Length: 170
Image 1: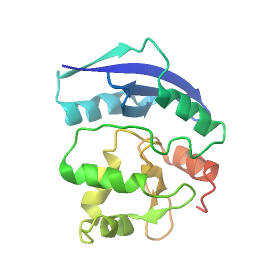
Image 2: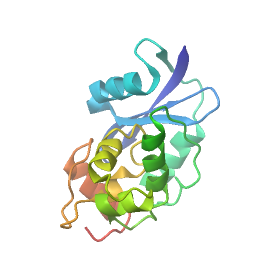
Image 3: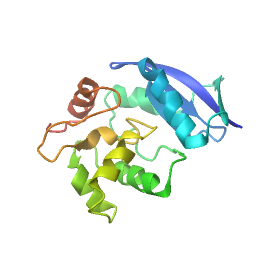
Image 4: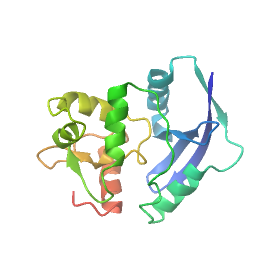
């Protein structure tokens, strides 16, 4: 049984839940208003009934980094340890997302090219949407090829806010 430790963070985008593991690696970042999404993604990642949530006893490095990020230190999330389940393909997409510099956006097609699979645009989009560690694994930096924002699990308004916060032209 994987135990995940929950912390809450009041942010400009609403309450956020952070789940870390016993090693302190960040496993989930999700808006509290999307608790059903958190459960669905964790079930997909770790298996239904194979994970549990407990309240964290101490403030994690992940929470401190997110507080700094929302206070304006947009590089505070760089290098933060994360861990995920998912398929090898999904993990490759999520690793490529972390390589997108703050303040920049790319298209789904460009992301597919960056992982060496330029024909996998739809699969990249699905992996992007299944990202359990929003904001830190910056799926919000991926936009439609026409320059539109595209979708975002937390809502397009939040995506627009995050991009503006990071200084991206979107």
